Image (cartoon, one colour):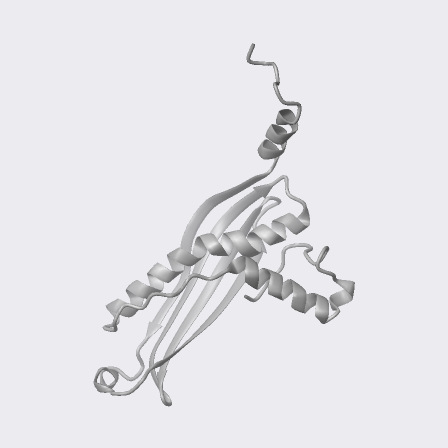
Length: 177
């Protein structure tokens, strides 16, 4: 008898799993830029390079359950006042979410979606830097969940319209990481 349940808790669990869905529909490069403004002189420069990284992500509704998430990474390599290279990528994806409350939607789009996009962006930047004549550069892993929680704490501390950590999430919006 395959229709019989041996554990009373099994049926609601199965229904919850079917009701909530998080799917990756498409992953793509939305924008890409690489500049070496002082080439070829930069290839003969001696000294220590300083690398700065800026990261942001943007969430835009596409339809009722679909959202575009764009992870924007900028790497700026400097030596003193001279720019060695500037590399930027906007790695994007379309994600479909169903069966989540608004807080769950924001959490997933602010943590899981960027975590899925990041390895793609990291690879694109690494390949771009190497193709530009520089040694390969590997960006370290990022804890997007930790960044999200830090942003929620900061928002709560700033008293953003009575927001607290328990209900800090709301409708999907543009967030900086």
